[in-house]
Amino acid sequence: MLLTAAAYPCRAQYPDERQTYFVDVSGGWTGVRKADSKNFGSFPVIQAGAGKLLTTSDPEKPGLYPDYRHWNIFLTGQFLWGESDLKQAALPVLINSNPQTPSLLSAQSGKGRFYSTTAGPRFQYSRDRWDIYGQVAGGWLRRSLELTGASTQGGALQPSSPSVFSRSANSGDIRATAGVAYGVKKLHVFAEIGMLAGFAVNHETMLAPILSGGVRW
Image (tube, rainbow, N blue to C red; front, side, top):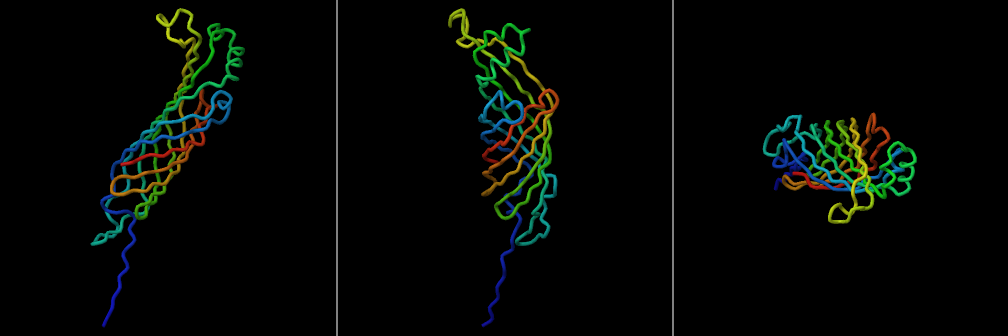
């Protein structure tokens, strides 16, 4: 009796999982570095993204068990939003440093909000249902600060924490991310670690590490 054996080919990615386009949503937590760490502590973030495959989606070796590319490049875009309470120790420093702004004297608390939109290439290695990837992106960062004080006119005429001062700063930014994903069919779960740093007026703002997880499809 003649016995024959054939090895099942190792494919970079299953045919029904090769996506030319994708979108994802995620949530996580980030720390604050550089000078802004004196103003804000770590805080939660919400993210959304999308991407397009730039390399070919055709198999390298067509046939009954086609062999697809292990290495691929995507063009990706990401949006990040987060909000953090201003540290109480930072409030008197802010007031004393800006005597020309008397409205700061009535401030009792504050919040910082961070918005970022970035785009750039993602380099991804895929084997079976696993993806490992890294990406570098650049774009826009908006950092806003709002200070609130005590109500002086009653709740009927004024909110419980009226805004007494607000300021926003816009600049460019750079973001770097590394991640791993596992997928079944066209649905993938993923985990990422990254950093984001602002330029120009926001050069003292750095969010790191950004730890997040989400769903991609």
